[in-house]
Image (cartoon, rainbow, N blue to C red; front, side, top):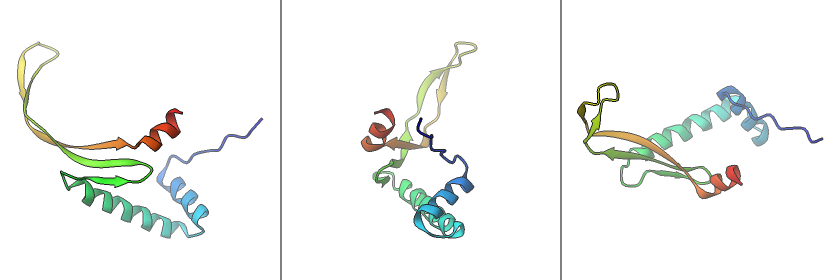
Length: 100
């Protein structure tokens, strides 16, 4: 039987795996990760474009318009304010790798 690969689920576990694979220190891996997150945040703030992370997907800021909704407890109509939300869309390659 083939041994299952353990996938790290914490930041420190991910940094250790990246450091080992790249042949760098955990501190260097964490610095690279933090910079990637910083770039993703700046890129997502560009509303019309967002930021595409090849192999993962796209991070973008979406403006949701104001709309009417219902209070589920009372059924009363309520007005929901317009707001901005962050949307992460998985790329086709990631979907295919996960879903098969």
